[in-house]
Length: 377
Ligand SMILES: Cc1cc2nc3c(=O)[nH]c(=O)nc-3n(C[C@H](O)[C@H](O)[C@H](O)COP(=O)(O)OP(=O)(O)OC[C@H]3O[C@@H](n4cnc5c(N)ncnc54)[C@H](O)[C@@H]3O)c2cc1C
Ligand code: SF4
Ligand code: SF4
Image: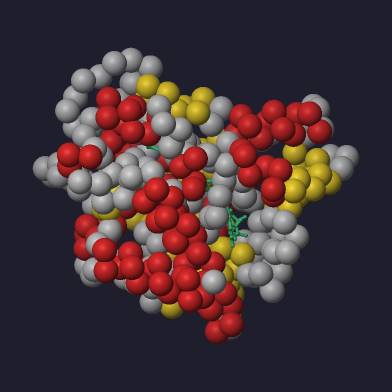
């Protein structure tokens, strides 16, 4: 991949509104900071190359190269990315009660990973009001305080960088697809550093179609329910077309058409719905409330699931073929939209004389993805 420095990151991503505030460039040096969902470069830095640029999921991401490094195989034509198996899952009896988003699979897996010492720290995302706050759990009993989805772009990876600075060597991270793209670039040693040791022992991705800008949502909800405490957010399956925000006193139904303006521009360029770079990826089950879709993508992911089931932390069931088809269609549609947008913006496979690209992917796979998504649409 082409690696540039902080000034190029500023020009390509922060100054163009492409930033989705993932936090991958934060806590690597004193220059990049995050505050209330926004990332900013506070001081000048003229390095020609930097980890900030190398990790960012919104510039010069080379999917073919990432696939070779992370999966040892060419980037697949399958809209769901590379995977071994798709199953249904939910938290098992050992997990107990919790305020989970869906089936509690993510919390259950992180609890078991900590309990069994597969990881020594878990990077999770809590919140204060509507502001998502990354955090670190070192014990299984700390995991549940982070459960449930915050539908705002979160600087989760600032906590991952911080955990590496603090010397954790077996970190587990839960993140959205863009965050896990950055994690894959970290794990793949995109800066080619000598003596590099991968600090991440487990990555669990969340399905994601869009996230909202934190400050935009704060202003939006501030008008509808001033001063109220937010209890939970959820997006019911189509055709509902709303984001439900539960406060202490009311349930706000925000039409997706009205909040679409709060989606950062970077999300429209995002080709990944199912967190393809995770060891495991987790999303909702549209027709089965209280269960999750769980995609197993790596050997460590497979072993974790098997052991978590045996230890009573996880329950699994067979995944319906009809659901796999729907999931694949939805993921394909997201890819087609993103590839079209990237093409229109001149950010796909950009030639050197034209500037830098946001995404690189071989033409054959692009054409197959575009055609299969069209057929499925
Ligand atoms: C922005 C966003 C968009 C999503 N869009 C979809 C979608 O389109 N389709 C779909 O099927 N599922 C989507 N999900 C995933 C879904 O909401 C659930 O997170 C998933 O099904 C796991 O459920 P669970 O019960 O296992 O999670 P829980 O056990 O409740 O755990 C949730 C985990 O999510 C992490 N988390 C919460 N918010 C964030 C955030 N903003 N950034 C990073 N990590 C976070 C927490 O650390 C926690 O560990 C989305 C999630 C997010 C955060
Ligand atoms: S997308 Fe992430 S890595 Fe890129 S500039 Fe924004 S916060 Fe930094
Ligand atoms: S749509 Fe893509 S870029 Fe936006 S928050 Fe989700 S994973 Fe990140």
